[in-house]
Image 1 (cartoon, one colour):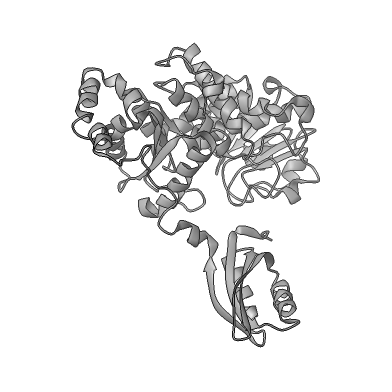
Image 2 (spheres, one colour; image 1 turned 120 degrees about the horizontal axis):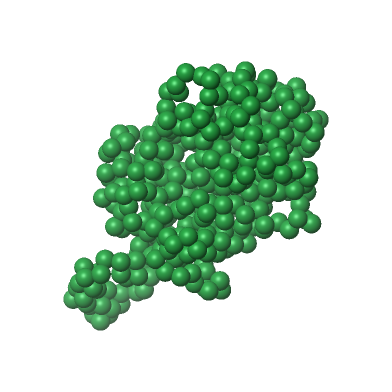
Length: 476
């Protein structure tokens, strides 16, 4: 059963006689409908009647409707109206563009716009790289999506994807002071997306690709990264991989195992699964088996339908394991799921090696619920905020782009990804690690700063930075 969540909070305005016991009847009715009261606010008192707003957390949309209907049955209580707090938050969008200085005088106008701006334009024309210092490129990222693979929703298109991209822009600003702008494209053609982003690139210091379906997202990222002078990063792939590696590093410290000595099963051979496997391999993992719907992918199979699966077949599964997930997971130390709900069973976890580590990251419903895995699992992580050890990309992308922009990096290479993972993991000292605390909270404000510093240093060290890093105290 789903837990009560602010994501399904409703505000119900009730009007009733201001008499003893009235409030008790209302709160009792909400409790009978299994609602969780978050706040109660007086709106007004008129003619012997009081109006109050009750904010109530529900389990889902239908549960919220049942709470309201139950309140309608309470005698002498009028339901004036209800509102969904999530929809209220989204009215008019969640972000805006503001000037950095006021325009109050003719002098202000002449410097910010014509005629003064002409000198800046000419300077950039003579030295295009100066656009990073003299325009918003210095601190601006494009969040680009075609709406073809929105988390938990699928192919809902560019207009419906916009609230997600706005939310991502908010996170960039909140956690790393990066200005990000959502761009939702009305095409799902690979060539059209590549060409559009190429044409938009002079406006931005980096490109964050988001919620684009596989395998197109892999080609789009690879080609744009080669062609553009700014870094291109598909967060669904590499952000996920970086945070998974960070959590796994700390999990292995807890159980006394090493990455090179464990057996890993990854369920899900899409973009995220492939990126996770690649990052684990360059980090030292030796024995990884990847499963798709048909079971373990191995070199003995016929040619794979796409290049990423063929790469998996050629570079993983050194023992040539075959069979369904329930077969290849036997004796494994680690399970990482980026696939579908409920594909992992309790008996599968019980068949793993001692002190098993399970990262069940399908969202919103994981491959196995923590309650089912609990009798056998040592360390459990999911993608959800209502369970411990949340694997959330917000631990990565704000700080990563902060570091990229600070040194004006031209790309995001493997060294920078590894540096980000190490920084996230090291935020928790080994002495503070617990089985249900192997990854920092998304609200740990240290994370973005240490990730930015680590990524910037790696960019400088590997020669992909246009300038040296700023002193640490100037970051963010």
